[in-house]
Length: 183
Ligand code: AMP
Image 1 (cartoon, rainbow, N blue to C red):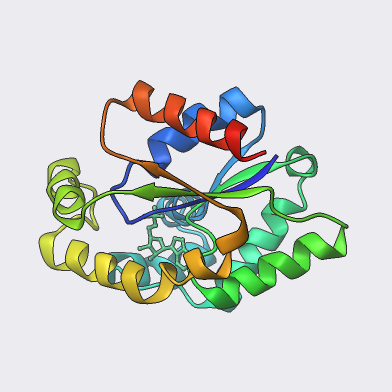
Image 2: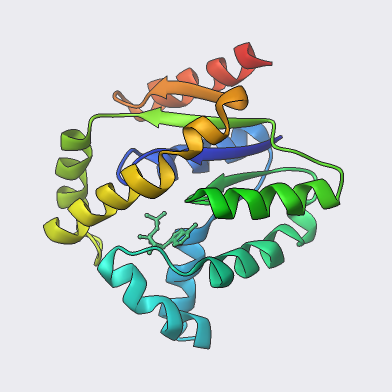
């Protein structure tokens, strides 16, 4: 299965991605995690992207797309994947479409996590990651609304939406059921 998760920062995508990736037997690929790993290992890429993460801005597309291209070319991702945090705008979605088409594939579904913005802001304030300061959180929500939410129209034919409020287990069951029903 080739799956993309879309939802505002703090919707619980990362937690669900881990569960769904093991249930569906495909690797979880999180661009945020990949960037944070580069930052903690102080690679050149990490140094280049740190300021964007700290400010809650999107890392430039060329940098992000190249990192994803390399990751998707690895052996474990050839049979399917679950992308968490990519694409984040329509131009990245075009690039992903091109990468997949080149190997004769396409996405099976885009799973949308629906949740109220006030709820996610509260959650993120409680999480306390370095980019979880209130002004940065608000900015990330705004970037989601303007840059990422348009993907829901872009992918309208394959979007599967679920209510992302509830227990972790309840939400993963909801997601698996919705994906099954959408087939
Ligand atoms: P996340 O862990 O998905 O919340 O991502 C954390 C941060 O990493 C974002 O605020 C961006 O700075 C950066 N980032 C993650 N994915 C992308 C992407 N697809 N395009 C650009 N920047 C990204």
